[in-house]
Amino acid sequence: MENVQQLRMKIRANEFTKPTTGYGMDRLQANVVILPKKYAYDFLLFCIRNPKPCPILEVTDAGSPYIKKYSDDIIDIRTDVPKYRVFKNGELVDEPFDIKDIWQDDFVTFLLGCSFTFENELINNGIPVKHINQGKNVAMYITNIETEPAGSFRGKQVVSMRPFHYSLIPRVVEITSRFPSAHGSPIHIGDPTQIGIKDIHSPDFGDPIDIAEDEVPVFWACGVTPQVALLNSKPDITITHAPGHMLITDYPTAKLAR
Image (cartoon, rainbow, N blue to C red; front, side, top):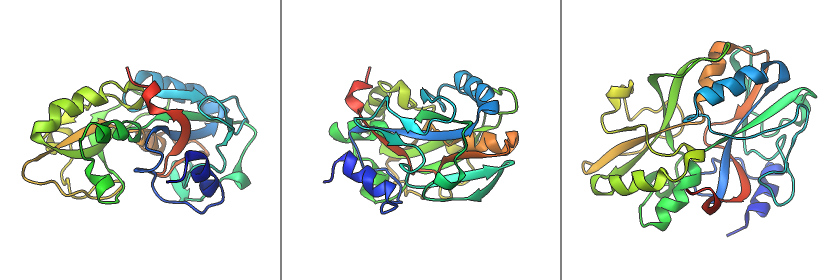
């Protein structure tokens, strides 16, 4: 299997534009939010008030497109995400494969933890991750759980879902709780209607995943939550990763475990 640097070069050249689940499995993956400096304080406050869906990994200087903290070389945030989303005034207007042509000198980049980071640890402990085995993106849903607002940023929390055999649930909770910077332990287990999900087979983002009779759906806070908040705050421009298309860093996931 190619290493992370080789994969990043393919992403940079727009040769890899797929979801990153199942890739770079032993490396930290991150959600991305890029917005003008004038909105950065309110968004930082939103993340601090909502650490489960928005665990902060890094915040760049205004105008800098480079990430050095989690890289053996230099990550260019303008090219090193497989697919982006561009929002203008709260509306999704584009999903490009790089953002070089629209980069601004006042952009601030936020890296937020991602649950893809702990999937390798589950697999290493003999716990199958169904969407990886099926070659799918993880299923994500908008819930009825309100985030704590900050300035104009507010909205419902998004969750990712992975089904597991009921006997594995205690071990799944134990393993994922060791990764608080990747959303940590689940926020809900079992009946999806209790968190406002009416149809578990129709996710708002990602791919539907079959749930067997002896499996239980398990839900984690998700870094797509800021994209819902953007629909309400309506900044003049914001850029995020496309759901499931994460920034893969060089940082070993083992160093994140507590």
